[in-house]
Image (cartoon, rainbow, N blue to C red; front, side, top):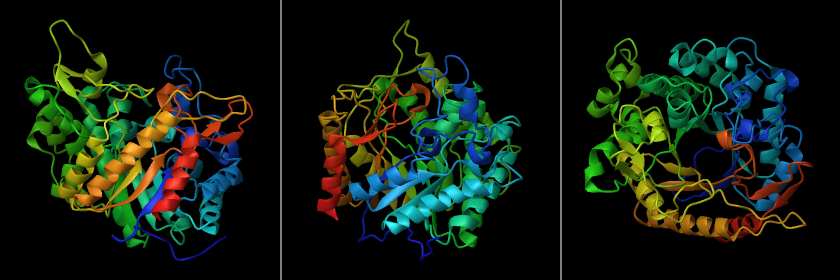
Amino acid sequence: MTSRPPTGLPDAQTFLWGTATASYQVEGATTADGRGPSIWDTFAALPGTVRDGKDGSVACDSYHRLDEDLALLDRLGVDAYRFSVAWPRVVPQGVGNVEGRGLDYYDRVVDGLLERGITPMVTLYHWDLPQALESRGGWLNRDTAEAFADYAMVVTERLADRVGLWATHNEPWCAALLGYAAGVHAPGRTEGTRALVAAHHLNLGHALAAHRMREAGAGDVGIVHNLNTVWPERPEAADVADGVDAIRNRVWIDPLVDGAYDERLRAIAPELADPDVVREGDLDLIRGSADWIGVNYYTPDRPDVLDEGEVDAGAAAAYPGVEGLTFRPRGPLTDIGWETDDRALTELLVATHERTGLPLLVTENGAACVDAVADDCRVDDQDRITYLRDHLAALERAREQGADVRGYVCWTLLDNFEWAEGYTKTFGLVHIDPETQDRTPKASFDFYADHVARHR
């Protein structure tokens, strides 16, 4: 085991360049070495939930190909690698028995990074909730927040001698609203505004874990959000845009900064005004519980009101309680249908810095593109390079405007299982042959490697 003083959040004069993956999207080996089932194993097995009918049982096989992936990181020349720990690989039933073989795997990840001079950035929850906990209510059950804090301490006790930069949750908006309201992500439930109960329990789980981890000397503990700019499409959309901002942004940031849920949010979701849900002391615990904020950014939101006769069931489901809502992205769009506008990243970083006063890391940014694979498996993805170049420039503009941004993490190292899109959308810097699992860096890999080398 490699042991050295852990590296935490960089200071304001230092900048981390990194890339990222997530456990269910790349590891595979979903039944290996005692790993328990996750909600994504269950969800992906249901007909019609994943676009191509596939799952993460093999994914990129990173559980067995760790050395290959570490070599790619070394070649890329990054300072940091953001990866997530699979809760069911470490605590298979969510609580109780700890699986040492799972912890052994993450030992190997951390040690392999440190041997190459790469800072580990560990995310504790990237959506793969143990199915046993979902069977008891999942994030709608307050006990899950306590279980998460216990699991976080298991990982902390194993890795904190070498890891000093932690995120509790990744994009809890997706876990709560796509998972418990829209039903398009695991666990596939459609609970309407009760999904905001899940949001509160995610906030609470973060705070419980962060305080305990910090007391144990874990280092710098933050949380990663897919916050977004909200640009109303026309003046008449101001009210629905405020509802979008409440559910997308304020439900996460207001408790962290102010220790409160605002009036509009409590009107949308009366559950957040229920003292049996938001109990005395909860918001005090959440306030000030993050040392840093991770910002995942891909595309701006352009909310609008529905025209007469128009229906948008997807928007209504993902933003329950916001009546008459649709979104109207403007071109050009990426392959997943997301608008590309780098100005929104600048605006978002500056606004988040001003609102929170916390150091920021761009923890995900990248583009899904239609990758034309040549006979030698090479991909000349100039559209992805253009996206990255524009957004890296937007990052620099935000820093010039005073945003305290201390790192940029490109999403993602490898083409992988893209959740409900299956393997139909590719974000990777590295092409994966689905038959052989051979890894071939794309043109964007070389572009990013060159950028990192020139800006160190």
